[in-house]
Image 1: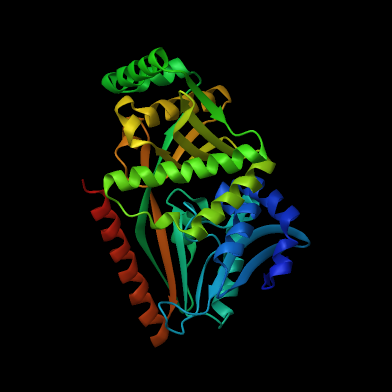
Image 2 (image 1 turned 135 degrees about the vertical axis):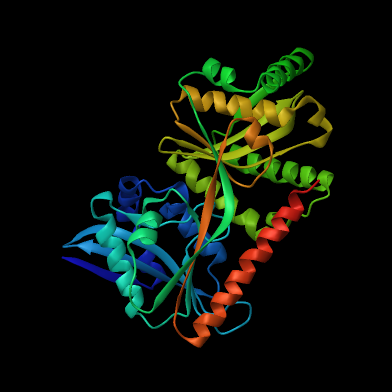
Length: 366
């Protein structure tokens, strides 16, 4: 028998770690649905919100987790919105559902939400368009007084990795391949060069500081704002880096030239996927393509380790296409009821999605 229970206490969430980890691996969830990522997000972004995690059981076996929270206001209005834990920093949002009971678990979650009165809208962001859960929801769910609308939110890029570095190089555009090899040879010929991966707690701290500094320099050189490097953002990722380091998921690299860190790459390793989250480089060394050289070294190592995918995550930067990455849409689902307050909130969220996309498009223009 399928049943749903709601977890609304912070301590109850902390106690879920072991079962959460098990379902993450079984369901094929991403690193952004991991217990560590969600817990650290709550500590840094949970103010003014309350947990609302739905657990789906078949008898006593956990078959699904809907990692939600409820915000008690939106844009200063007293409107209650259900969203994914991790919204904002997370490049992908989704449910964790056991493959053998995916349909039944999703049906139970939607039925529970339909009978729950304590929300005005459900705003589920950054769902990968190839998500099996999203496909079931789109194709199979209907009925009741709920209205489901979907919008394109962001575009993510992922690269399928072959079995060898030489095979990967041959798949690249000839000119781009020549540039990678030429600048790598030139840099290593004329300078003392080392690619280093953080392998201690102290190196993680130092590596994150270098990353933020280099990213800020690059953004300023391009004339772009750096709101993502707020104190809260930096604090969140420093703690994520340490949590993931303990799990063996952190991939924090630096490229040193003549003893100076000139490029940094912050990513994650989970399952058969490498996630490239953030990078930065010193504009002074840009003429030697130091960021490209570092990415190439990291991709080579990912291939040697047997990873199947190098995920460049959100953002339509042109360099991702040069590496052969393929675009995929992220979807935003807005679920509302047939009532005036819910309709008002739906209109606000729809407009918000449009405005954010327009801002991102303007920032991408040279």
